[in-house]
Image (cartoon, rainbow, N blue to C red):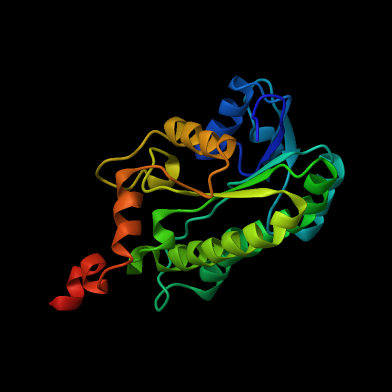
Amino acid sequence: MEITGAVALVTGANRGLGRQFAAALVERGAAKVYAAARNPESVDLPGVIPLQLDVTDPESVRAAAAIAGDVTLLVNNAGSSTGASVLGGSLEDIRLEMDTHYFGTLAVTREFAPILERNGGGAVLNVLSVLSWFTSPQVAAYSAAKSAAWSLTNALRLELASQKTQVTALHVGYMDTDMAKHVDGPKIDPAVVAGLALEGVEQGRYEVLADDVSRGVRAGLSGDLTGLYPSLTA
């Protein structure tokens, strides 16, 4: 689909990658950009329409859909990162990860799917992660939720095909955002990631692997698990 002239809604658009998505959409000629956030007053980007949306609150999701009935591109970007492990982390944190990345993405997409259909089909872009395919104790709850969101994205792609809604998945490693400020090592510019993802939407691609880390891990899925988890051989 064409970004120019599209009406887009970006969840979690007040900072990080979401803010870069909203900025890139404006720059690329989107007719309207709804910048959704739990606190819309925190949206400070010129040229967008702040919109209250908490993806974990069904009433908030319904209210946003009632306002943004002209959307043709939905960007499911909102996320959480509790750092919870599956054994030592609190169940509350683990549930938050799943509520945000899986159930939140599902709730927003279910609400906006009829809107996209009425508006000609359009597209959905789901922000996933290299951690959809790889995990460690420090990110186990987040990774499990992103894995669930990956499976959800594939299912949505199949179900939405009949209404001519394309579904694109974005996978990326660490970006230079607040969520990864504790990470030492290479980080990709989120503005670059947003650009690559939107190009993928325009090209009708099913997946966008935005960096070498994502491409390497994805390729490693076809090999023995010890290739991704060398500690298993110790």
